[in-house]
Every structure is written in C-alpha cells, then in structure tokens.
Length: 261
Ligand code: LHQ
Image 1: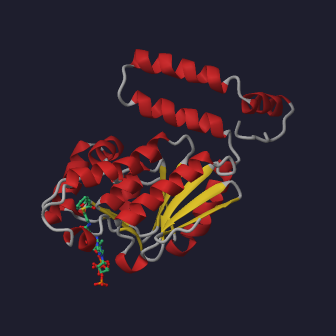
Image 2: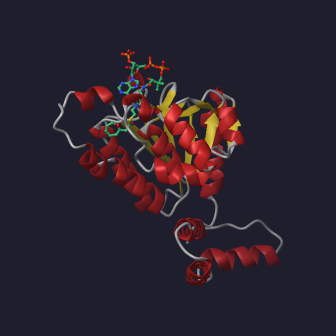
C-alpha cells in the first residue's frame, strides 16, 4: 500500500505499522492520522494478520500532534472537530479491533502519541522510552483518550500528576506503575516485539478478540452484566475450531495448532 507517513507490512501473521516521520519525532499530521487508521482497518480485515505491532521509526514513538502544521491553520480551527475526525477514530479502531495490538514503544510517547500508545493492549518499552503528557505545557488538557485510559492503567493520582507536571515518565518507572509489561534493551526492541507478536499470532485469535471485547465492556458494567456478557461470548468461543483443537491437543498431549477461527 502506498503510504507516505507510515510503513505497513504483514509477515508471519503479524501486521507491523511503523509511524514514519522521524525528523519530527513521528508527530501526527492529518495524513499520518488517516494512514494509521487505514492501516489498522486493513489489519483488522486481513485474515493473515492475527496480531498488530505499532511502533515508531527513529528515536521517538510519537511526539503527538504536529504543532507546526496545526498552528499554521490559524486560530479559527476547531480542536474538537480535529479530535473527533482524527484521534477519536484512531483510538476507537484500536480498542474495537478484535486482535491484540502490541505497542513497541521505542522512544518518547508524548501528547496524543501517548494516547495512541495507551490504546494498545500491551506495551513493551525500549529502555530509552518515556511517556509524557505534554498537553499542559501548551495549555491544553489530555486528549485522544488519555483521560479514560491512563487512570484505569496507573490510577487517578499518578495520572493526574503526569498531566499537570508534564514530566517524562521513564521506562523503568512505567514498568513499576504497570504502564508497560516489559522493558528491553533499546536495540533489541524490534526483534523482541516481533517475536512476541509472532507468538501471539499463533494463538486462538477469535478468543483473543472476544477477550478484548469482554474486558473493555466490563470497565463500564456491573458484575452481573459482565457475567452475562462473558457467558454470551464464551458460547461463541466454545463453538470455534480453536476450542475443538485446543481440547484435542490437550487430550493428545501435544501443542495446539490454532487457526484463529
Ligand atoms: C515536533 C514535535 C511536534 C512538530 C518534536 N510537532 N514538530 C490535539 C489536537 C489539537 C491540537 C493540539 O494537540 C493535540 C494533542 C497533542 O498531542 S498536544 C501535545 C503535542 N506535543 C507536544 O507538545 C510535544 C512537543 N515536543 C516536545 O516537547 C519535544 O520534542 C519532546 C519532549 C517530545 C522531545 O524532545 P527532544 O528529544 O529534545 O527533541 P526536540 O524537541 O529537539 O525535537 C526534535 C525535532 O522534532 C525538532 O525539530 P527540529 O527541526 O528543531 O530538529 C522539533 O521541533 C520536532 N518536533 N515534537 N509535536
């Protein structure tokens, strides 16, 4: 696919999306927002893609909104409209697509770049990576879903402090706070994230997708509703080829060969 601002490839069951404006630390302009959304949708549709890796080229994951491009449009631009048409669709697509998304956080994730990193299901960070809610430095509030994701992941007080101080949270602290699952040597991040994603791509993709749906729904429901919904989805998982294969493999004492269906 002919993208200008991202790289997209599907190999070994993994769709890799690389934000690719390294001279601007992968700041999001309109094209990069649209292309990332398009690539996520393509990965969602592609049966050959059973896991997604989202990462950045160069030394940053993403520095958030491209402030140069944005500022040049003048004062009459509606930020709300920009958010609704851009980041909201991106973040919603990430949360609703029923395949695991691994954020390979290779460097700083700032502003909306942090929002996009938080919308991934699992984050693996390079030792040099950091997370920064840069918004307050320019007199804004967190957006692109940060207010929803971050307190849920690290708790309100840490999230609020990150927002009002705009200080960088380094990878080691992010690990301690549960913001990332693993920290790996920077040079090895692409290889480690790819190997991990390949392993996930061999899993029961349908069940992985339904799990994502069940957990995301459960944030906003009562226990009773969550129990009812998981029973409904388990009925679907229980009729999958992978459930038959998983049980057969267990009984035959061999590793399962999941098709994702
Ligand atoms: C950039 C950017 C950038 C353009 C680095 N844009 N060029 C939503 C809707 C509408 C409006 C506003 O916002 C939003 C959501 C948001 O995302 S708000 C938050 C926007 N992001 C920021 O405020 C972060 C701005 N960047 C920084 O604070 C620093 O660049 C960080 C801390 C990320 C990295 O610092 P350094 O490692 O020291 O790198 P640097 O500052 O030297 O940047 C390298 C180059 O990248 C530099 O260009 P140059 O031509 O001088 O080499 C920067 O101008 C450019 N760049 N971020 N967001």
